[in-house]
Length: 196
Image (cartoon, helix red, strand yellow):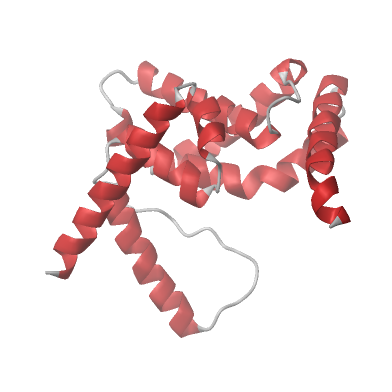
């Protein structure tokens, strides 16, 4: 019971420590943040853009922005919410610079999403079935409009709450809910049609 009661305070203390660490500009602190969030951030960027090189460039640019603008981070937000918001704005800026390319086109590549190695070594059968399932999900996600795909990825891949997604998108909670609903309905229809 004591652990449950102290959980929110631990979260608040961590967010305050992250805000203070960013304000101090300590490079060791930034390195610890990169270690903690690198996999999630890269996966998010890779799924939004569909291109490994673009995701890598945006990943580096995001951390440069965090370093430059860290003093603006306020501990009233979770750090990962702020971090994903910074990354999202960079994706939007990239799409604006490439006027001929829409955000949906950024995710359409012939290569498909490259594998990101996780720790641990599953057996070959698990790798095969996980690969098949990942390909099916990636194909289904390509059928979603960018706005819905983004919400689905943040909710189920990044495990963010709806209010946190609203902060990242700077959109009303009702908009996030409707995009999530439309995205899930589109995915359901896609998978039902695939089984016929």
